Amino acid sequence: MSQEYVKGAAVRFLGGHLGALLPFAAFLAGVAWLAWSGAPDERGFWPLLVAAIGLGMLLARDRRAYSEALVRGMSQPLVALMILAWLLAGLLAQLLNAGGFVQSVIWLTQTVGLSSGGFVVASFLVCCLVSTATGTSLGTIVLCAPLLYPAGSELGAVPAVLMGAILGGATFGDNVSPVSDSTIASAGTQGAAIGDVVRSRLRYALPAAGASLAIYALTGGGTDAGVASALEASPEALPLVLAPLAALGLLLAGRHLVEGLLMGAAVAVALALALGLIESGELLRVELGSYRAEGILLTGLERGVGVSIFTLLLMALVGGLEAGGFLEAILAKIERTTQRAVAAEGTIFAAISAAAVITTHSVVALLAVGPLADRNGRRAGLAATRRANLLDLTVCTYPFILPYCIPTVLAASLTADGTAPTLPAWTIGLHNFHSWALFGMVLVAVSTGYGRRKDRPG
Image 1 (cartoon, helix red, strand yellow):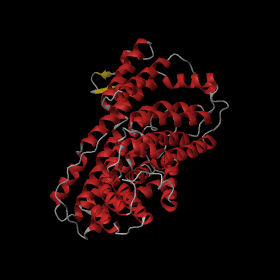
Image 2 (tube, one colour):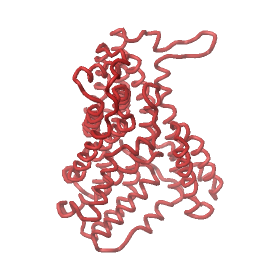
Image 3 (tube, rainbow, N blue to C red):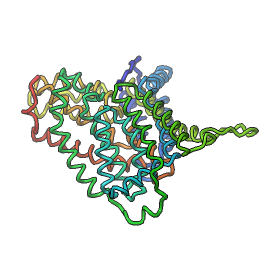
Image 4 (cartoon, rainbow, N blue to C red):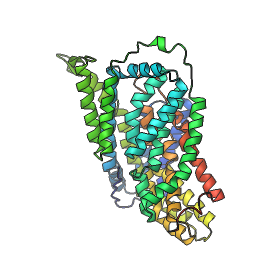
C-alpha cells in the first residue's frame, strides 16, 4: 500500500512547536491512563482523540487552517483504503465464524495432534509466509486473525501470546518482503536496490524471528486438556478455507486488497449456503414495522466500525500535528554533521524513532526521515543498504508495539467478537516478541556495528 499525503499550509500554535505537540501528548497521557485502568476496546480511544483535537483547536492561531489540516489527515487515500478493508475484513470473519469454520479448524488440529503451544508457533509461521508473500502486514492481520485467534484460544493457547504471534508474523513480512511498502520506501529514499536490501536485511530479521519463535513456543502453550470436550468440533466447514485462500490468491497475483476481500466474502457466502452451514435468511433480515435490519452481513460490517472511527480521528490528530511543523523541527535538531559512522547511525535511529512514535505510520516516518538518513549516512560512509535497513528495522517496531498505533488497535478489534477473550491493544503489542526482537537487533547493530561492513557501499 502506498502513502499519499498532500501537505497544506503550515499552522501556527500558541506556544510554538510545544503547542503543536501538546494535543498529541494529551492523547498519549489518556492512552496511558486507559491502559492503567483496564484498556477498553478501540472505542475507548474515541473521546480521548476528540478531546485532543479540541485542545489543538484551542491552541491553533488559525482555526480554519487547523480544521483543514484535520480534514487532510483524515482524507488520505490510505485512510480510506484502511477503513474499507476493516469493514470487509469484519464481514469475511463473521461469515466464517457463522459457518462454523473455527470448529472445523479445531477438529483438524486435534486430528493431527497439534498442541496449543504448537498452534501458536504454527500461527506465527503462517503469518510470516502470508505477510512475506503479500507484503502487507495489515492485510495479513485481517485475513489471518479471524481464523487463527478463535481456534487457538479454544485449543487452550495463551490468548495474548497467540495474538502477539499473529501480529509478529505480520510484522516479519512487512520488514523483509520485496513488495512491502516499507521495504520500497526505505530502499527508495536511500537509492538502494530492493534486492540488495532484502538480502542484507535477512541477517537482522532471521535471528529476530528465531528468538521470537522460541519465546512463542515456550510461552504460548496453555491448558490442552479438556478443550476438545467443550466443543462440537467437526470437519464440515473446512471447505470455507477457500474463501480466505481466494483473497490471498488475488493478493499474490498483485490484485488490490479490496478486490481480494470482496472476493473472499463472496466465496464464503456461496460456500456456506451451498453446504447448508447457514440459511439465506440469516444473511439479512428486515423486521417489518420496527424499521430494523439484522443478520450476519450487518454484524460483520459493524465489526469494522470501531477501528474505522479510531483511524479517522487518529489521522486527523496526526494531520494537525504535522501541519504544526513539529516533526521538521525535531529532525532539524537531531541532525548532526559528524563523520563517525556510529554517531550517524545513532542519529538515524533517533530521528526515525521520533518520526514513527509521532506519526504512528511507518511509511510516513520513512519519507520524512529518509533525506536526513541519506545525507548523514553518506557523509559517514554508510552503505545505502545499511541506511535502509536501520530505517526499516526501526519502523517495524514502534507501530507494532505501541497501543495507539493502527496495527495493534486493529489486532485488538479483531479479538472483540465474543468468540474468544477480548484483548487490549497494549497487551497484544507487549506480546509481539518479533518486534521486540527487531528492536534489540537495531540496538545491537548501532552499538556494535553488527552487519555494517557486510553491506555494500552506496
